[in-house]
Amino acid sequence: GQNIDQPTEMTATEGAIVQINCTYQTSGFNGLFWYQQHAGEAPTFLSYNVLDGLEEKGRFSSFLSRSKGYSYLLLKELQMKDSASYLCAVKRNAGNMLTFGGGTRLMVKP
Amino acid sequence: GAVVSQHPSWVICKSGTSVKIECRSLDFQATTMFWYRQFPKQSLMLMATSNEGSKATYEQGVEKDKFLINHASLTLSTLTVTSAHPEDSSFYICSAKGLAGTDTQYFGPGTRLTVL
Image (tube, rainbow over all chains, first blue to last red; front, side, top):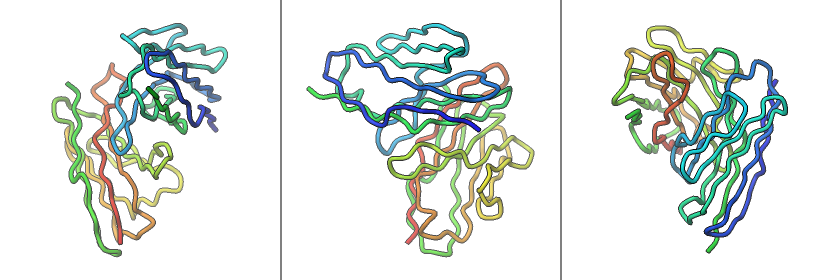
């Protein structure tokens, strides 16, 4: 089976930095995705990590450690519009299927 | 690029009727499309994977006779909820994966189904 764990909720202040963690236990790991989802909308792609290390994309960065089964999404210079759910999803083996974690609801306060 | 559309955006129907939801990749060919269901404040749960021209692969616990999936072309997949009941009310989201070499799934805007 698979276990993908994320904190349920987080709160941060506008302009600050927040780190959202994701831990997973799965066989045949073949990549990890982060998606952003605003309430009532579909998820939008943020990042994809398959090798260990940090991937940076503007204000968003994602880190992966395969040996530890751990990833995080780092959001810098938080803006109010960053209030959303952030979904961690694991890809297994060579297939296309993604398994999603429960998502982390981030609330950015002024 | 990589735009996925869904139609309708929302639908309200009576119990016992069937509802068809379309998922289209607008600017790329999707060899594989996925159908997810999301209940309020929960994450996405994969229902089925459909490959163009072949039968869909359903996840455990998803009734294939109730949720009919047709992936007739590289740009269109449809999900039909047959004999819908109130417990089928949910947010249905499709995603599409492009041709070989890209692993990213691109999501449609979702369809909110309410069964009365």
